[in-house]
Image (cartoon, rainbow, N blue to C red; front, side, top):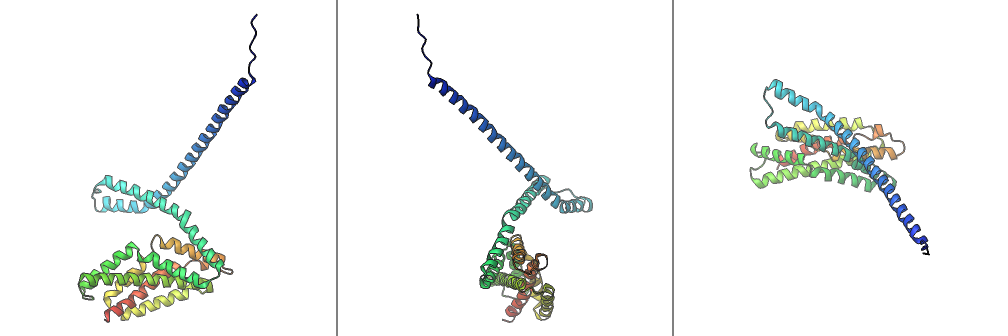
Length: 286
């Protein structure tokens, strides 16, 4: 008579444990896969929504160019494949830029404005405003291009010596003048928000000063001065400056963000004209 070997409880328990482990692992893996799929689908939907918005924003200028190229000039697009690839790059770049503004620059500007307001140091706030205006303007590519073209035109007109060194110095001095003017503009704008001064009187007074200086400034500098007011509103300066103004007006008691928070960009476009006109008078007088 053969005796039956008793089965080990460990073997049953071990097998049950291993089975449960694989079963739970499979369920956990399934949940992870499902969660990742959901996140990927959500990301794809957001990506397509933002890309669609960027394409919609580019549609008017695209239609204008296409109309004049095909209907008015009656010429085909040169290298159409390259143009279409470039349009796709612009749309994707615009989408990423706008998303980056919403994620980083706008919150950062508002957070810094809130921190400076709570710190209670007027000197630190005004120093930050000047540094922000100067730093974002001095390396602005549009300003560099305008300064270089202005130096060439000034040399051809005999306003400066037509040497490479003289033109480089003129362009550099012009860039520094514009950058300093934007820094001063932000200081004035921030101080206006703190004091609650009406913006229209400052803007009107500034343009009256521009007209007065135009009458006495050298003609060679007038056009450059007027254009320098436009090149300062760059893609980096505008979001940070706007967020700074709105953030300050939000945290300061008695200020309305819709009334007091905006206007810094107007100062940043106005003061370069004044400073460059004065710069032209000083350089032309030497």
